[in-house]
Length: 391
Image 1 (cartoon, rainbow, N blue to C red):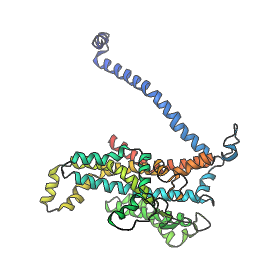
Image 2 (cartoon, one colour):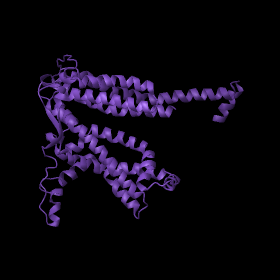
Image 3 (cartoon, rainbow, N blue to C red):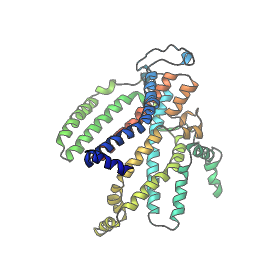
Image 4 (cartoon, rainbow, N blue to C red):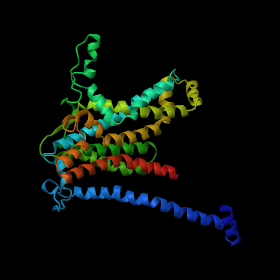
């Protein structure tokens, strides 16, 4: 039928180019018609609800008006956001933000390191590689709820991991894996604005130095001058007046989070192992042999040949693991429950605030903050991927 139609159009004087043009336009119209329902649903149920959540976060919807048929909602601007970061009663939110950041760093680092180690071992063509690969990948097939249930039993204060020393005649350990209230790496939330300014200044100066080393003097001047001004301002005490709170409020890394980090890394290290193993298998042996001929030992081959070539895989894994960590909910819920403050994260607090406390506006504010933090991680990666694909 297509041949008859083509011949008919050719006879009508359109020619082969005209036939191709008609088909191209018809395919484009069909593609738009097929994709259009998905775009409409996406616009309503994803971006529309995001916009609604942002609007709710700017109101006072909650408490008595939460369940009213016709609630009286007033526009409050950024009050909920200011209250979360500097309000007297929102200490738990600030500690949850700190917990989430520590968890993200440790979880991503542990998953990458363990995955790279396992991939390096399997890349030695050991006997039974397929069996080990399946064993290491198996935890990834479990949901976080199942993983949390397993590790909750393993990390009981009077059982599981703590009784392992008794197998060799030692006393049982007494570490409180999920309930410890001890903190390390503490800092004062009151000084957070000053710390942020210092970090920004150091980042600008470091970026300027990096640009100057690559002879990008214009970029170095644009970033270095503001960095030096900020650093000088901080050094002269100008940032001393910047305070997030009128009183000291220490926050730090809760040791109870170690159990959650171990469980999460156990589940996702198989994922990073698979990525790294695939990357290692694509590196030509000629590159390793050339490095050895130049006198490089085994560690130098890893440092100067394999790790640089695995950098794109590392960045992809950081993006995937990072956004999982920032929105972590089910693993913490299953391991420690929603009311265990030492292991709480913002997603848990959003759930409690919204559906238990009926403070819909404050819960929406926490959701928007989480969305922004995930976007900071995802958007630059998407922009870089888009530019790479376009070039």
